[in-house]
Image (cartoon, rainbow, N blue to C red; front, side, top):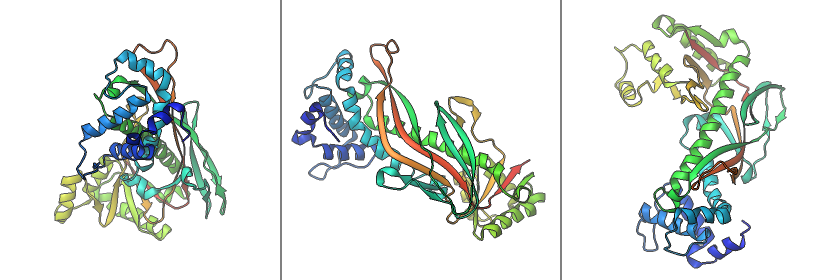
Length: 367
């Protein structure tokens, strides 16, 4: 990091070592326990006070000084972007590691982080349908193309921007802590990427080969259980791999109609009690697809209910996600668009999403 004269002043102090502060900030914003030199756990309020003292120092305030909102506003004009240069690293780390507990991501997404030296190349071993999510003029569009056997494709990347309206004094005066800010930004990025992933995946179902064999449109009832089981078997046979069943929670719950309550195991009853649905169907794992609203419109859902997907479960990372790994915070406040205390920033990160379907999968549309 190329320090300005002001940041050099701040991080030349022994108590404000930059690498140490960066690790402290990363640990705090990822909710890890922080220990002092004596091995005692540092309370969260003390940790936030430490972060605030460095932030206030960057803005030019003396230790223990309590600036007014007006003073903070003026200091942000002079040193605000320097402050965010320091916070960018914490956001980088949080975004990059924020997928670890996502079941869909862990099972079906191949991730490349270009900041870690990965090449943005994906190899197609057979004919595939490629669905790319592009960001153009602030809108997310899908484009389709056909890749032949043995082709290499580079996933196009775009800048994803998350606007953050900040009443900056609530953080700098300790009424809110910085982990809340980092959490909010990371979650926003995860949601917008997941939306693009799900939209590209669902749209690609229309491009499947031999559609009639692997797509069914029937009620999910005991009368159709044999057809449902045959679809699972066909997908397993076509891929020579076991499968999983994926869908919205409301649709996965409908599989209980195929399970005879007289023989359902005690373990499955516990699954229903804990998850609100079965955890498996006759040995086939069920994976829940989180529902999402269309961006800025809670009246529309991204995923239309009523579909279950049967997907091969081994080496099937058909979603390709490229993260350039460079978060930037820019001031997007325009003259006349803020009052005395409110400033607006946009957190930008360059990423790319694509779906490469090179294996058969099944679709059961619940009539």
